[in-house]
Image (tube, rainbow, N blue to C red; front, top):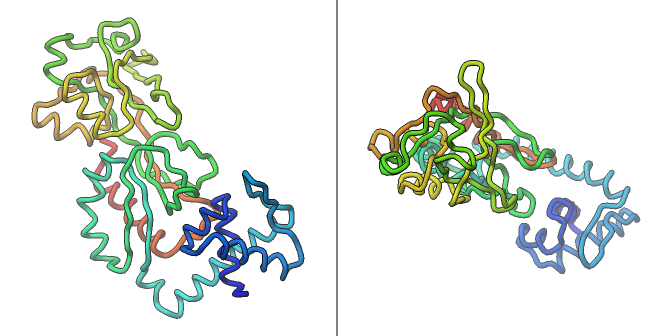
Length: 305
């Protein structure tokens, strides 16, 4: 038995909750992953995992051993990096998932700079607004706006995004210009384009807005809800309703005359944006440099304005 392979297999089974998914991420067969964990249990003379047809769970001995196994693998990776020079020149595959407008407007245009600095890092970029499961999807980190659905993740705040309300000129010509946020509420004369998480299945509402000492919570009426940021903007440009957008996304559309800001004297609650990763995931050199580079990129972009 190769103890390193066995430790890797055990840790991946725990992280993914499945021998099948662990085997896929390690690019070995399910039989090999099963045998490696069984051999590890035989060597230690303890049962590490309870297995049923539906799930895999740690035993009490397994839970104690898991923490040690994660640290051992992390220490070994660091030791190898210090000898080979990988710590100074990070390399390897890095899987990142980001929202589609952020990828299009901010991240992808800046990637030539990242690759010039770290040419040995192979970046695999997932571009979506769905809620990604870092374990099941084997993702190293995610960039997300709003409150993180998984409170167990380690997160680093990137920025509080400045927000505004916008609509297409054609929509405003048809429905009029809203003078108060209450007009966006259900029963009011205006409608909004809804943004929803398909995993949660409901639009992200209500919307907090403030002017002076007056504060309102808008529960808007929508006839369309989408789960992709680019489609959300396209719906607003098409005149389907009022949008609430990070201002960095709206700028080009406002400049082109496709969108007009409304309710400009009302302050919309900013949208926090964070980068997050698993707490039991070894923070590799390539992940560290990507996060640091990303923080500097967002600061330079002034997305809070």
